Amino acid sequence: MLEHNISNKDLTIFLLVTFGLTTGMGIAMAFVYTKYTMGVFSKAQAYYPAIGVMIALLLNKEKRKKLPMKFYGSYLFFTITSILFLLVEIFVFHKNPDMYIECWMIVGSITTLLMCSFPSEKESLYNFGLGFGKNVKTSLGCILLFFVLYICTNILNELIFGSVKEIITFFKDIKIFMQFIFLLPFWFLFQFILFLGEEYGWRYFLQTALQRRLGKRKGIIILGIIWGIWHLPLSLFHYRATISFYSILDLLICCIPYAIFFGFVYMKTENIWTVSIIHFFNNFFGAFIFNSSTGANGFGHLICMFIVYLPFLFTKEYRKYEEEIELTNGL
Image 1 (tube, helix red, strand yellow):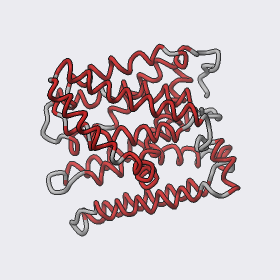
Image 2 (cartoon, one colour):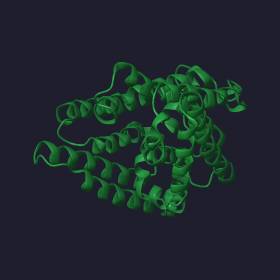
Image 3 (tube, helix red, strand yellow):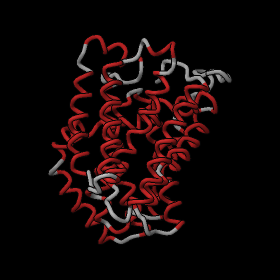
């Protein structure tokens, strides 16, 4: 968990940077979404929460000297250059930069990961939520748990809202997925900069800030709402540019059950890499399994997500309140 208090100033800077970038790039998406694929904007948006955290902490004089500067510097360089390159390619040269951004993301992931190997960075990485070795066994258990729950959610969805035929199709997809299972760790290493980008902002920073101010349960629900709103440009221009208001609302609300489970995992493991890996798995499953079975999207699936993930709100991780956290106005 976060070992440093998050001041109101830090929190304000984080929100301004994260949602400022999201809003600005969302406006850019509105102008070009009919001409280009929006996957490149989706990748860029994943960086914004981590950028918000890093800028907030870099502007904090007390914390600046203790930060993992090599890691932060590398991350900021590759993410900011990716955003600038995206904008120049689309608005100046009128080309789709997707392939170049993908390659730059791989280079950035490898380079940023190498920054963790410096002995001088080790202590500061752990102090600011980026240590690798926390609760490894528990982390592996949580990753396995997510995999099981993901399958259960889809089976439940098909049983209630789909058909037995779709369940059979789903398991066929699982078999296909299992052929790639050993490649997943390598794919994560080449793409981690995206998933850490979200989780470092939402789980490491904002979850802790909200829970210390509002309590663990209320804080995680508010986080889920904020996280959903943050997805709005992608919901409008990338995921489903022609869907109805209710479908967009469905996409926004689904962040609440995910926030509950991801928040549980982070409180249990205190390892941001674990949650980043689970986030990566979730997106991978959605791309290779989820979309291939007809019942996996929609309001019915949202109901099943709440049935599966809502009970985690009553685990001991969420029952620990002020015995761990003092609620003050100046955290």
